[in-house]
Image (cartoon, rainbow, N blue to C red; front, side):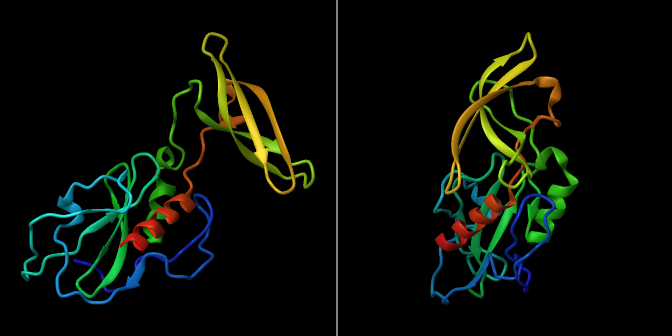
Length: 211
């Protein structure tokens, strides 16, 4: 029951960002084939961890035409599924399935859903050695405040502190250091990473390219 309109337009940025590009992200006209693999995303039971793999089954649609295989993306955010599938016209479409099992067919639906679910936009992790968190810091050259990703080196549950190691390496700066934060300062000095829509867009591109 595919919609006959373009589902996803490519956007950039993190949760809540405006769309800034009109380039097609997840639709592509493919050559018609005489025969196609069977199976549907709903009953295929494919795994999001099997990038480039297709899910097939023996079912057919009401018209007697078997739907194409669904191709799943690799390296999706935890709990998410991203797959691409060609419709009967040969147009490849990509779908995002959230941790709540909600199926999102457009970028607008994806952004609206994430904006309405803070726990999904910024999922809580478990404080332990190796956990990835972000800390607020000021960039010396520009003076801008930004959130930098780091890895927890030590977690003092009794003392209520975490020691976080940071590493930056780019064309303008390079460095490695550690900082200690109070667990109680979550949301002020440190936070759990925000869900990156860019990462989901990349997964959509991967699934579409594979399909």
